[in-house]
Image (cartoon, rainbow, N blue to C red; front, side, top):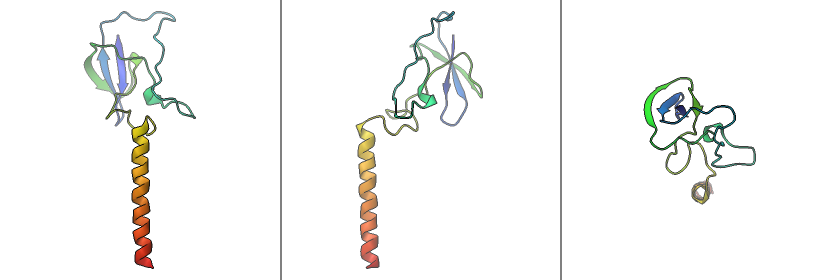
Length: 109
């Protein structure tokens, strides 16, 4: 069975797993890693890539079954609300912007 995994820059990586082909309605359920208020990003959808799958190439269009994009540093690329770590980064960014604004205001005054 061939699986296609989206690449961050576009295109797909192809993987092959020694598994029977699915027939009819016996496809595995899609796995949703983070459901947000407006839905789930398409790069997080797909059937799980089986263990032991080996890389067999890459291309511009998907082949076989679509698997979710590979994880990057604990979260999928572009996902900013996967956990509390993201909120910590958001808080630090807000604090940094507040400090820059404060010092700019003091220099102007």
